[in-house]
Length: 434
Image 1 (cartoon, one colour):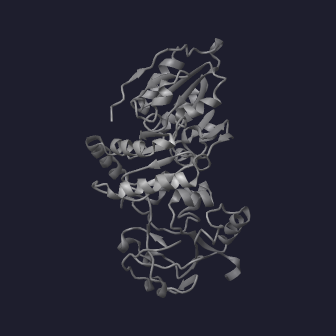
Image 2: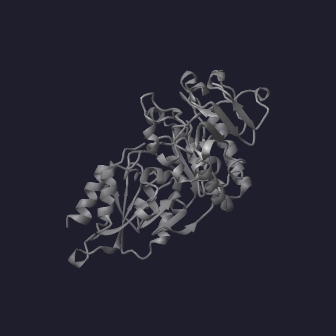
Image 3: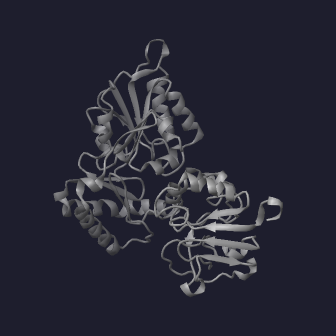
């Protein structure tokens, strides 16, 4: 490299598992530092077969923002899979889980080395997709637009452990449950630390699976000046942070992911629980096998991937598959309301696995949660004994909804909301306007 300057015409492209990290482990500080050093010499990128959520768990949360375009470096102008043609690269900051990059690879005979070097972009020609095992080159689903011929590098070095190759139910009713509480401010307008406002996420603080708006984020900051504020969601912390922000565990006094099975207070982890250790592998396997057979026999308009998501304290089951697009989510939600796909499935599973004492909770647009009895959102209340009043706000407070148990709990004052805007309006009336 001439006079030590960066050679921008050379791209070093890395697989993740077994190359930058041990399989499914986080990157070490030493490797992360080395990658930064390498970028001073050549253009650097990483590519993996996993979705962005899982890759960011290994390479760091900043993999999703502008300092790491196409995972590492702002140098590789490859469009994001499943995104509309007009979407620009700057939208990487609002990447949602449905945007996955299509996985394609050549036959083993086409590339026999872990390092593949090409002398000119013109040598890449789009070819048909094929199945792949393990890490693989990831490009946009449109072969003509995203074929490697579009990569503007005279020399492309792709490093990986394996081969790396290139082809082309009842509606919620607004209201407040039972006792009203005082919700009064402390004397002199000080924060009333004895009152907790506890919020569901989807449909309460955000639109389903959407990012919190700047207005709602600012309102939550204002509300914390008046009462203690917490959030509780069925999703894991990665997904909640995608919606409420990476600093969610410090933006709220309490953050309960997976219904409180993973609990944070003032940014510190205060408790965890594991479904695997509670049920055991044999019972888990029995349930998962039966559920997958049921979904395989289910006749619905479309199916995608990730039908069961294993979380620390629950299973999330989706008849359509969590890899569906937002448009497909919306269509399935309408279809489900007419044909009761999820309620019927829950009924079958509840009868089949009555001996496991499981709770089934329908939430969101496309899925339902499965967890041991008592592991619903009331689980988080064990961390909140100090509060005189706990006001819970949720949108699915009807029986069978994933907010029902905590809404009905004697420990809470339940409030049904219809949207984030309704949440803010009710909170303003209860806690701020007095």
